[in-house]
Image 1 (cartoon, rainbow, N blue to C red):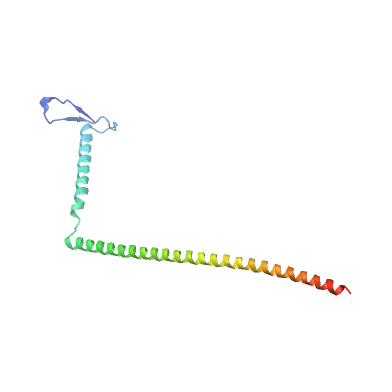
Image 2 (image 1 turned 120 degrees about the vertical axis):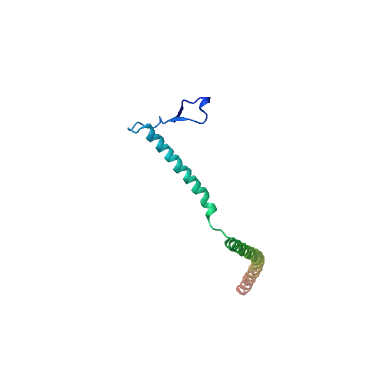
Length: 144
């Protein structure tokens, strides 16, 4: 679209030439009319879209209901957050108790293993002493 014949004396009068449109056998007057019609439709759509939000009926009662619902949802969320924190605290306590039990059982198992090793050594020493005693007694009985 180009502006033709614009001079300072013409003021607000502009003559538009629609050169961007292909020549389909449509006269310039029809092209201008179609352009004007498209412009009007576009403006109406913009106005309707802008006014649509202000036409939505939001009275005080609806606003209060939404506010009350938001407050209730926030309270529910806070209650859930407290419950989650409580569960996390319980989990931490259980993990500490578990660590204590594991540590105690490891200590007990280690003590039991040490005791078994000591008693095995003592029994082996006693067994060796008894074997030696048997050999001595057999040697005495074999000597006439």
